[in-house]
Image (cartoon, rainbow, N blue to C red; front, side):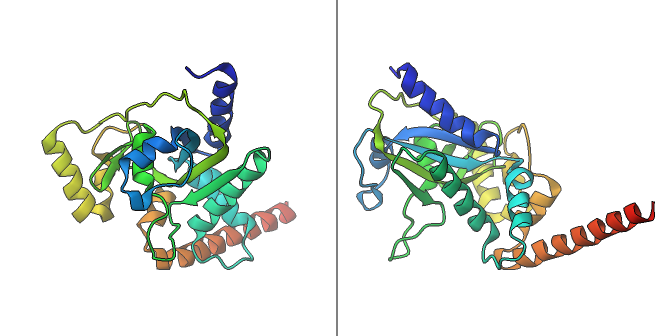
Length: 241
């Protein structure tokens, strides 16, 4: 059973991410390693505390847009990845007393192999149900994204209880529909609504993630241009008053 101090730590880390429109779910390294092939094992003690972090609807406006606004002069190859690196680094700075390792969802080793399987981490942590290639969140359906794994190397949590993920698509016919939409109709995002959802992405967020990665910087430049025009117009009108 988790004691008061352990519960305080879990809540502190969870709350850190919540107001940035992320969710963080704890798991033990043992749970993850038991679910993957040895080639994907994480080299830490079984009871080491880790978290899977995922972004939920609202992250775009709450975290990503301010990041872009504050880094306008920088050339950013992949803006979302750069934003995630920034946010995870801020987390490390916020908990200086711990030895923290981060694996982003886009991190690859020298052989171009994923350093961590975020869908599996999400499943063993009880965050979202992973079925073959698609993962479904009980509140957001497909309107979320796994962003990375945080490992607190110096924290052992032998009493952490594992929560099974909610299978929001329990029927075989619905699972087939989900996989068909995910594999063949992913551009229209219909797979994200395979279950009733509490929230969806905003229209700008949908447009961004529906845009090919190579064209996203152009889209951001367009938004910056439009925002600059509007800002200058407001200043001009204010001066004229």
